Image (cartoon, rainbow over all chains, first blue to last red; front, side, top):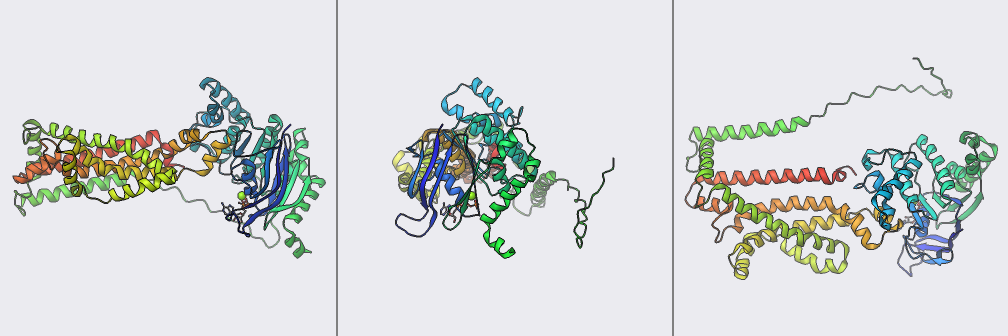
Length: 263
Length: 282
Ligand SMILES: Nc1ncnc2c1ncn2[C@@H]1O[C@H](COP(=O)(O)OP(=O)(O)OP(=O)(O)O)[C@@H](O)[C@H]1O
Ligand SMILES: [Mg+2]
């Protein structure tokens, strides 16, 4: 059991000393292994900045980012990242992309290929190992990106709108994949998304970020993903009155102006 | 098989009629090639006509047939104590020697300029100083410093080839996707692993492009390099032929250089397709 913790984290892109330009204002967030935390919020509310802090790509202006109490000094294989535009390595085949983390660790070629193929099969891409990146569709590329991340056996999976560029149909398949990957790896997931329904369906906890500067507006506990994993159909879950009520509540939180206008 | 159409239109909505997409246009890849061949043919015809009608003195513009005959003579008997093949290999050796030198120097320098502020501060001015200089301007200095041997000739060409190699490499390294570097780092890559597994392959297409540009520069510098104390080489052959107004040999020399440059360009384009097929797709 590990915990990735953001503790009263503030971030400003402006040079040190400048007052304005605050992008995140005293944000608290904890992701434990086996948690599935989804962060939603309007464009510009600082979601990507938050994930980049957790990944170690950025250092906070104030507050701390830590794993099990140890400050995060930079990116590392315990926090693998899945990117919105896949960020695959086009000079490598699908299999070699997945095997990248193993290659860094010095795993031999045969073992690498065996494990990469097993991971590809797990994300529904059995037999696609020899394909070049540009021969894959957007959805397939995201699957490779996810397989590449879990190959590092991370304690935390950080994903910045991984399904944002996919069509609606593919996105639903991929949501189900994310749930099984979450269950099978036991990793803690931090998912950035702008899909309210997506966040609610997947996450055990939905964090709503309010813009200007980004701060935690609300936290909502949910458990619909577990229902799906224990066999309840996704469409039935999404039509459940409890699900609909929570979804409308999240809508209100994210877009209060529209609610007022309608009232 | 017939599909039932259900309607969920709200009152007032109009059903959208979907027009069939226009048929795909056949891609005319041949058209470009045909246009090139026709242009070549027309130029050759104009040349033949001008020579045949004697619009220009044969001394200045020999007919294509005379040039072909001169080429045959060059292959068998040679010109200025060397056959065409010997002139050709001498020049090719110099250009390739210069290419090797410009890669060995230019690629690391390009990396240094792109990745380090100090490297950039030191090396960028040197490259920018060198880049616009015409080879004929520094040729005397190279001779004064390094003599008239083979090394000086290669150096003159290499000095012209290094800047495009450096500039192209640096541009390639700078353009490496930030997300890919981050992806590698978050998968556990160390700094040197990022360099080896991400930056190097990312920059490879730009290095090849730099090589292509540098080769073009190299051929255009050849004549200058062979101005002094050469006894062989296409550039030397052209110059000595020009001194005796042997125009057909001059033209053969020009055509050989143009063909070799074109051939090497095609080779590198092939290498690009073979080894960096992703560069045009992503
Ligand atoms: N590198 C940067 N330099 C300066 N300002 C930045 C930088 N990155 C983001 N910002 C600013 O920080 C704020 C938050 O950006 P961020 O990308 O974190 O938002 P987001 O919630 O991910 O938005 P989106 O939903 O559009 O992806 C924005 O106002 C943006 O202009
Ligand atoms: Mg974002």
